[in-house]
Image (tube, rainbow, N blue to C red; front, top):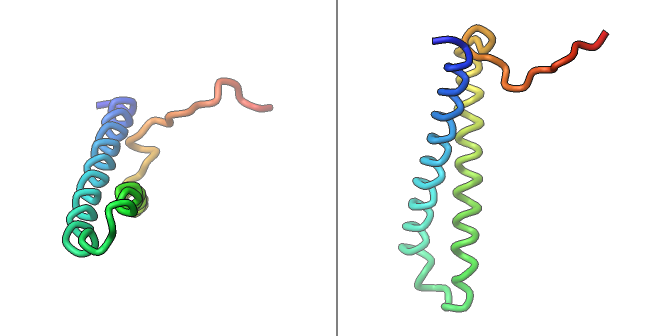
Length: 93
């Protein structure tokens, strides 16, 4: 495989991983909410809980993705295996 294919596969796999972590953390936070908090909050105030759970799951997936990417960058030589996504058309003189 060449660098462009490696870059494309990395982007696709990283996106799928990020979506999976978001879904799993959302399910986990929702289960924790149902188990511990749902019975204590009245019905009118529980509408904010879905938004907060969703935002928390996005934050968790962002943090996990950043941690894993930093770990990967220490283990893999990026320039050797991946092609740059954004390339300048003209070089500055």
